[in-house]
Image (tube, rainbow, N blue to C red; front, side, top):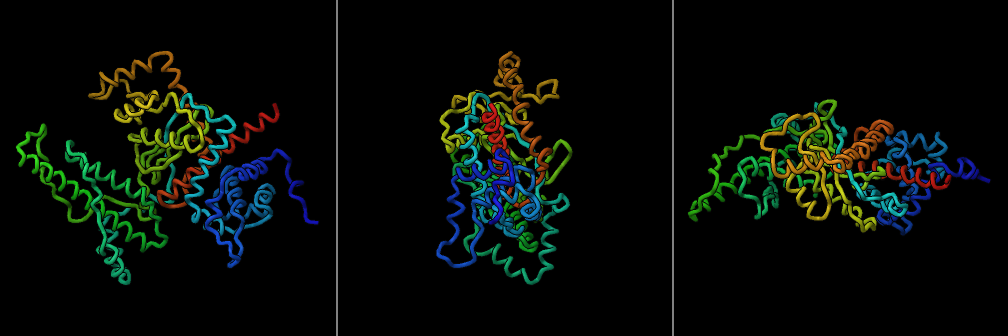
Length: 453
């Protein structure tokens, strides 16, 4: 008789918990992509593959080769894998093929936490942490260098011209309702923001070969220049229309825009979606991983962007939190949202308050002794008074103890401080899988404590 896996581990081991938890998840998105007509080589059971990845990530192991080796050497991993041993290529392709479904596991695990009573919503803390991309800072290259390398690849020139100038290509991403009351810098900034939003929605995978990545990098730089030129043209058209109508604008017309001959700026040729970000330890090439956490250190929302600052992320993270709660079947909403000074955004804070959620965000950084110029009176003075009250100060002081341990456990205990795959969509999928396994570990300890009690 073959050995019984039930004899290999004690009943309360984390591996058994993962296997049982996966049995409660909706894995239809994984099974739906496989053919069931009997043709082809049988695939590994998707449920087993999901359990294997969840267990490995929870233990801080993400390397496909090390997971493959653990399927032979580690008893707990062999139990989770059902004594199967998928190779590293199979594991890597499974993560790539099921990128979106793996990201959605976050919501499935959050539903389990909600059923266990762990999703309490008195106070929710929002913060971000910088994680390295699978790219080096030395790979940041300007357009001239990229173009020079492309031209050296004679066999790729024809394909490059077809992709760049083929029919149906369009870089006009500015909608008709684009803002017109700001200055030239604001127009260009909003044009870039809308371009980044469109790229995030497209979620184009990063090409594997370097020649293809170079063409993609050149295309993006040209696209950014075209968007800036179009934004300047739209603003000039707006001013011309106002002048023709006899309007008297409150501000002066913008200076004539002279676009550069070639796109400016640099782009990373290893991961074009990543950015050079400022972190406490210096600059790194990576992503800004955002999280919303309750006072039981359960991650309620997890998203990824490439912005170096947290400014502008408060509203989107609250929206993501409310969306995750709705999908998890939780009808309650947070009472208070706390975040550090980097999240101050007056418009977004007003919108959140209008939803019935109190916001506590200090207008001043912790090391600042005097207010920033122009940041006095009005909502700034009101927030300072609120934070100086006993209740306001008590609520805000919870922030660090709620969310910082989550990042510390991720980056130091589990040694997850960089993404393995390239591209914004791949990084988002991985970040949500990382935070889902954090929640799974919290749920395991919660159930173990109840069993002992």
